[in-house]
Image (cartoon, rainbow, N blue to C red; front, top):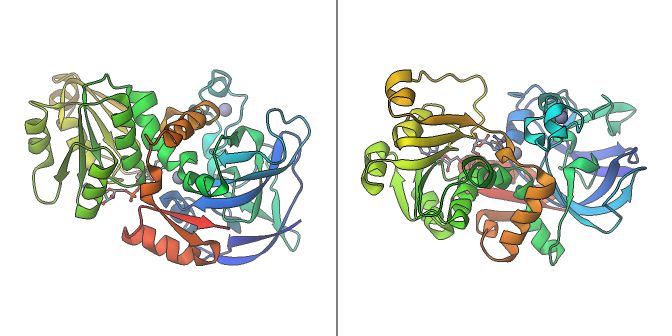
Length: 365
Ligand SMILES: NC(=O)c1ccc[n+]([C@@H]2O[C@H](COP(=O)([O-])OP(=O)(O)OC[C@H]3O[C@@H](n4cnc5c(N)ncnc54)[C@H](O)[C@@H]3O)[C@@H](O)[C@H]2O)c1
Ligand SMILES: [Zn+2]
Ligand SMILES: [Zn+2]
């Protein structure tokens, strides 16, 4: 079938064009897009900081309605509303154990542009076109593996459109807290970087019952929004020494920290602000950046843990329905982060994401 998609033929460029989409194969589904989030990882791909094979269709936070299912698909039927998430192979030891975020084939399935069998579903003039994250959600229709389409119970297509980032950014931030850190009620938690991922971590810390939730950012409007979604304290890292401030607020150091600013050097602050036995989780994607960590005074003597986690340590099939339930109960106010743009205004959406004007742009089809 012919679909309308934003295609990247050369580094840094996108244009909306007509593309061919194959029918779903076994274990795959065809989804009509309602909306797609715009994530920083998409720009990294478009600008070839991640060397995805071009031409490619980016986008990996799509939501929509199932139109057709391939042979052997269980649990999904035409008409189901789905949130699409990251792909995983389903057969490596991590997937078999229910830990798809640690899939051995993650890098290939996220960034190579092809499906598990190495083939592609989009094409143009007979030439294959890559699907980013096995999705390529900057397209009016996509074919995805049924493993990365999660059926959800939402009231309307309008509500579904608000939930795009549950597939990546929100899952990453909320999962870092609820799956990886699992903070005890009344514990203290610091989030470095109040962007889409960090805001979700703040909402999750409130759900978990943390009593002190501290947002660190350098943009006053972000800090204000952090208070709106659950932070109890804010620190402007440009105006004060964040570690000193956090130690004051937490009487000596926080139990937990999340590094989601994307600034590698902040890892040291995220460790220094902890109390003994504290844990820091890193979720920022920073390429091959390196940070020198003084082992004895920073990790050993205070006895703290540093962990890294992809996609919030989440199994999308079980975690996303939980997040939808929190949203329906008003406990995960992700609608406060979004701004809707018609699909045709995709370049404006990216511009507003880069400038920080919009926390989470959503393209509506
Ligand atoms: N690990 C994963 O699976 C995964 C998934 C999605 C996103 N990410 C990564 O998470 C990170 C955050 O993503 P996002 O979409 O929230 O980005 P974002 O740009 O919306 O948020 C980053 C925030 O950090 C703040 N910041 C920048 N410099 C700072 C400083 N020196 N001190 C304090 N705050 C500072 C910015 O003002 C902004 O609010 C990115 O690195 C992204 O690539 C990871
Ligand atoms: Zn796997
Ligand atoms: Zn993403």
